[in-house]
Length: 156
Image 1 (cartoon, helix red, strand yellow):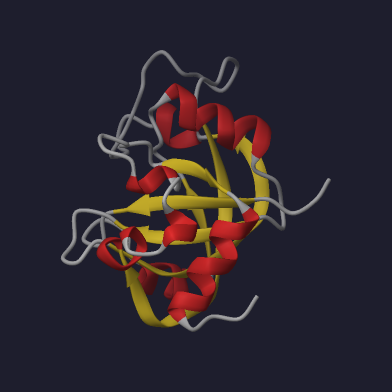
Image 2 (cartoon, one colour):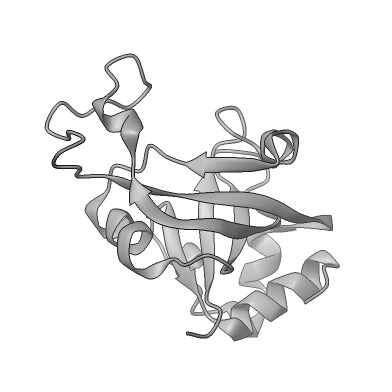
């Protein structure tokens, strides 16, 4: 299967790109949206590329890239009542939620802001730029991936 590309959103005060760099590999857990869960469970594969997006920040921007280090598996934070996002309906025997592991790849020399992306015709259909798009995990086309990398000074 060819490499695919994704955008993962995170609030930097909850989990930033700096956290990912420090952790080396991190579980992308706590996703509690069924559409995003289905992507994590069935679509996102080891080796896929990730644009790391800081949401609820000023400015909203893509900070860098990451690589999927482990494909989807059950999110055990759902059945941990002490976690930040438990779900008592999810159990080890019948998991509802899934996660992947990611590792930092490259921090952009210049974060790519939403305003810069909106000004780029090649990105006009990018999901993150659509009004009301709140999905925390979303697909990115290869063309969008390459355009964002060029804008951020990253390497393909």
